[in-house]
Length: 344
Image (cartoon, rainbow, N blue to C red):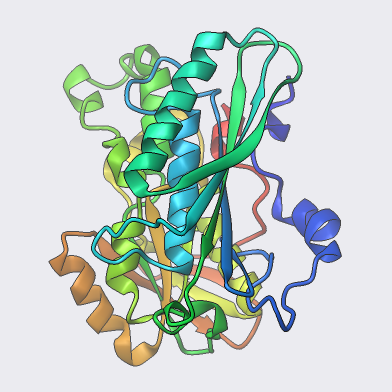
């Protein structure tokens, strides 16, 4: 199997063969499909999706393709319209698509559907349909979740980040730490290999609770200050930065050492010879904010217990530069090609 073609399409393929055929904005669609956008707004409806594959999630307690797909969809919904005080979205519908390998057992389907129906009930979502089918060999499978939320007329005024524009001089804040989901999956799938270099006690410090994949609490905190938000996911923080600047049609100057990252993520990436800044980063968030509000927002995040930092500033030019005085480094961020997990 050619691992290069596993996972999300590259930014270049998306732009050349998918997004170029779609309208970004119309009179009835203030926020349409584009690079760096996690949702679409049409009339009074927000549409988001989230997808996940089972390949690295098998036999891992507490997470599955269905649960990760649901979290990603819910994350995207929170970036368009954050939930306040854990409100239930009784105006939200949910569709489920499952593509199964020919050897995928019925008990897996039953387990995932039971999980999704419980999550839908917990959040007040109404499941209205979907599609389940077999394709190809093996027992791997993928799950895609589509959420649609109908907005009331007064809701639109609460948060309209889709109508706001990032400007040169605005700051970019990162909340959470990059590469955590990817490194956690590597730890849980390759523990025996890691034990050849690291002690068992240190390996236990690698990774994190899958509950922290949910960024909706963070999006609620930044709601009043954010110009635009974008979750970090496939391709890590580098991919998210490129997509966000591409959507804004701006460049950016990033300070490398300001990017929040845990030391175990660096070490596990070094072990596998991959770049931790291009590693699956679900659970972290990028926020564009006006210069005068950056420190205010940073203080809010710190007071709520989140690791966060001002990592860069948007520029009028189109260059996406990562620099460091400490490490005497200057690099250009290139379009997302594939997540580092695909290299292993």
